[in-house]
Length: 89
Image (cartoon, rainbow, N blue to C red; front, top):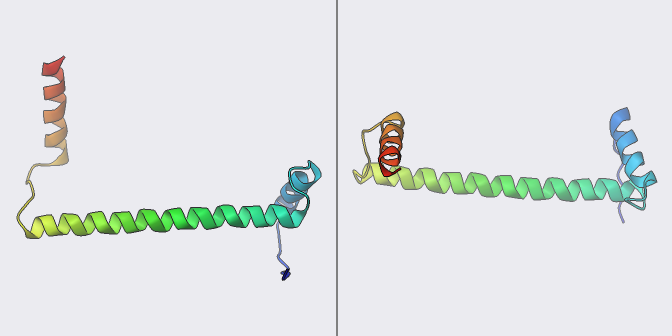
């Protein structure tokens, strides 16, 4: 397996050693690899959220261009929802 030298803060080093010493991981390398896997998952989730936002913004722009929009403010819409909810109670 390839190796890489990395610089850690004293706090990071203590945390890695604490996890390895507690038996949660067999070695410091396993701790770092697990941290990198977590970072990979977070980055993939972030990329997915960005793609969803881009798609939704594009859909909204298409609606505006097609004339499918309201000139009501979000506050107006919220007030109407609250009024309807109060009447339904």
